[in-house]
Length: 172
Image 1 (cartoon, one colour):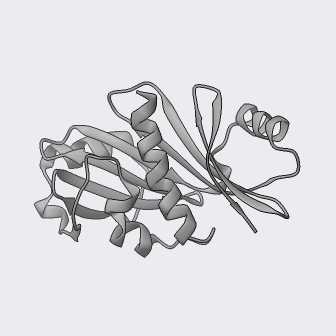
Image 2: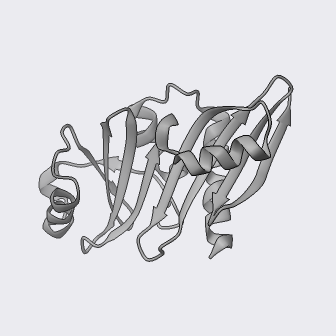
C-alpha cells in the first residue's frame, strides 16, 4: 500500500515543482489528471451537472452538504468535483457508478499539530510551503505530501502512518 501512496506522492512532486503556493482553481481542473491517482488518466473535460451520474451527485451532496460553487469534470473512469472552501482546494473523485474513489485536499493548513511537530523535529528550520492530503476511499491510510523550504534547499516529503520520507530534494 505504501508503494501506491509513493506513486501518488511522486505525482504531487511533479505538480509541486510547477505550482506556487497561490495555486488557482483553474490549474487544479485543467491539470486534474496530473493531480489524481492512477484512477485518472488522459485529458479531462468539464461537464454539465446533468451529465454527472445521479449516484455521484447524491454521494457528494451527502458528504459535502455546505459546499458552494462546485465544478464537475468528467474523467475517463468517472467524475471529479472541485471546490474551494476555507482556503482549501479540494477534488473528490467518483467512479462512473458514483462510488467515492479518492479525495485530494490542497492547502497550507492541512497538517495536524502532531504532524507539524514531527516535521519540526525532523527538519530544523524549514518552512512549510505546500501541503497536499490524499485519501484513497478503499484504504484507511491518509498520505500527506509536503513541500518544505529553507535557505539552501527545497524538499518534498511524504508522510504515511507517521513515517516521513524525503521523496525529492533540490539544492538552491
